[in-house]
Length: 584
Image (cartoon, rainbow, N blue to C red):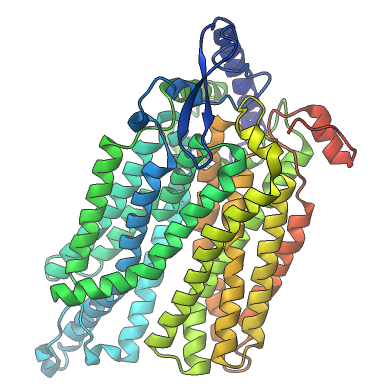
């Protein structure tokens, strides 16, 4: 039994109207004020209004995205939110998380191997004397039996983390709208910190903390949202700080920081382990990074959501809850729990919405989830496939990772900003200086970038299918890396379709979809590869290419210029294909 969604949508629309009425009443009483404009590269700068009789904030009836910038006008620079507070620390955390991937896997192998031989020693006492060192490459641990148990253990861990992350990510995203971005980022970082601490205990005290405690670490990370929720909230923070025409570029910076961390983390980790002489040492470094990030976030980074915007979001949430009749007891509440309820933000109803808008949101979310899932599903397959087809060792695999991620960072840091600078034109830059009239929904440049990126993904994976030499496979990976500019643009386009007070809720729902894709896609494509590797190893790449082609075709059904609260005439014109003057 599930919750009826129609009353929820109606309650949401009623809450919007109530909050809108309160906001208008408050705005009508404002007089002297200041506006803020957003600088060209993110961050905030203060400007004084020419007309001091103009209200501090625009009426919400005129625009569902009241700019928060004016509320920071009187603050010194070090108390104003900016992406440059978050971006460097985000890169360091990404570097630390990537740096423990290989040591964590080696540690799991050693602990499971230790448990396996401990069980076997009952029937064969000779095995009890094997010199197994935790975290080192023990030759005895390369058996098929140990590998099977490791594969099963990591599958359980990914399922636990992925499912819990899918449940908590949308909740955390919605909470960030009501209580601020930084508190939720601290929660996600604390989960990763506790997870590393549990792994460290399992490494140092394997008798007291057996290997199954690492499953607890997976669960804690999932409950706190894992890195998926952390990235969603970081995007929400960036959305609060930058104009709409800059979002895809800044989201690209965050993706570039992530992939740079993925590329450099294992290398930096390897050198640190070599210098310190112990694989366990890298977990101390990771814990120190998380502690530093939590302290820096809690003490120094300015909050991007003002108290007034948080209070308005809490008021709206309270009105929504009050409109839904309470269940009689906790058993009914559990029975009526709807796992997919957070996705209602992708299907808004009420004033200012339209079928075209809902179709846009669903298509963009579906394409974004598909692209994310395909990338996640291809990672392990690529490593296994190249080992089978080209006899690659760790060196060649590392070269593939470096070329792929290096190319992706180039497109995110260089190509995407240049596209936004030269193709959006002067009108978009003027729009950034006038936050009262932000662009409505995704524009033609966004859609062009999305379609081009998915096209490169499709060509790159088709290249994987046709490659019969390792050099062609490497070239195909560089081509597919050009598709990396699609993900930040997709998520930026999604945020342009909802009011600013729902940004965290929207990106939390995207986090739910990403968490599900993280579980489903690798499972499906690993199963395809296992079933076809003996007869036709390229079948998995054909499947991936076909899915990318479908996503590319679906992107052509997305329309520009649609957002919640936009002009009904505009949205009706988009729906019918009419030519309607736009305000952007």
